[in-house]
Amino acid sequence: MEQDTQKSTTVDFWNGNRSAARQVYERKVLQAILEATEEEWGAWEIRESLEEYPGDEESLVFTGKGHDLFVTIAGNQKFKEGDMIVIPQLLTKNLLGYRIPIIREEDAGLFGGIRQAGELQKLAHGIPETWSDAIIFRRNGYNMVEEGTFDDIFDRLQNRLFDYSAYGANEVLGVYENRASKREGLIIDQNILLFYPFPLVFYVNPELPEMAQRIEQGMQSIISSGKLDAIFNEHYGDITAQLNLDSRRIFVLDNPLIPDEFRDLAPDLENL
Image 1 (cartoon, rainbow, N blue to C red):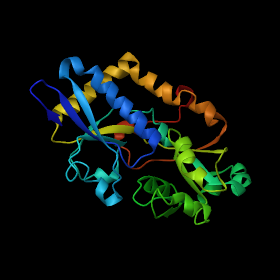
Image 2: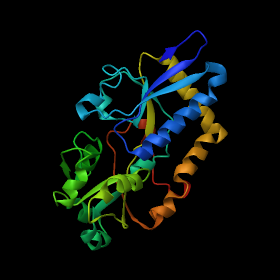
Image 3: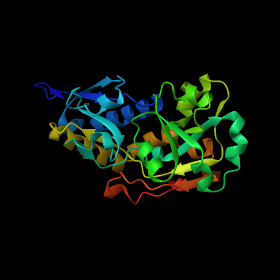
């Protein structure tokens, strides 16, 4: 964070290693926060980085890369040793915790016939290396294939190295359009919905307590004013209908990594 004598703040925001849909949404939330706090905290400018960091470098967002803040899941194990400041308000109503599979079109009948968790647990779930979702699924008895990267995940699905790969309801349409649809024979499954507490929150550089104070104050402001809901509805207001969320068979998983303050999050499709 840089600040001049006119109290104008440059915020170094890392927004890489995520889908384009998430990048747009999270940028808008940060802009709204800074606008809501401008009168008290001063003018601002966002310096955004979309650089992709390999899994072993992502934990260096603050100490090695020098960024001020970013958005990630609460309880992200890549940062369990750090002293970052976590802002406890949710950005997307736990939408990332509603997971929808992308599958091979030829397997639509197989997934459409699944009625019990055990049937899905026997199938292989492909996930890029270092994604913390793998721990959650493995702890809940799911068969995981954890290797490769986000860039090659759908080549491997197409080549039958696993049976499906699941993504959050806030990103699955974008992931499919921008990545999976480029490979022949892949579709978004229409039957299965997996759920676990997986809220997105701001992490702030521990050396910037004033920045953390501004972000938390701004989050509280845009929540109480309805601005956060307006951003959510702009991006995801019709997500339940788009993805037929309320007609899917839902399987609820425990997230052993989630901090206690988020552990009670439960499926709530009516309020999406």
